[in-house]
Image (cartoon, rainbow, N blue to C red; front, side):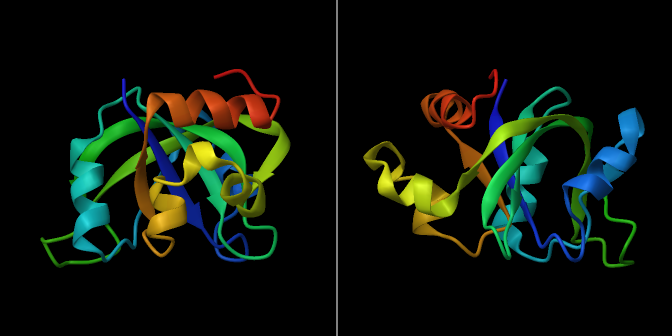
Length: 139
């Protein structure tokens, strides 16, 4: 299993929107960055990810699961762009803010700190466990 982070502006698509899609999940569409697209191509059904609100609170607020492997992005006719589908698994008991992450030296190499504009990012198993612990959430 691999771990990921999905960033979204809550005014466009927030945690409540993701939860409302239920077990069917929703396409993580609209990504127009080659590196983020390539990360989605690496994802497998069952991989887990953090759901991160990139505006306002700037915090990890929940855990999602990849429920469909990479496929053509239905929001464009351009065949270069693919996406995965994700579904909500559970919210964080305590959101983990970007300030929390930046203040903790264990995350200095995390793409969220080093490449903050990337909308889809890998997360190491150690980072995954540590952030879940900070959020009082089971991994």
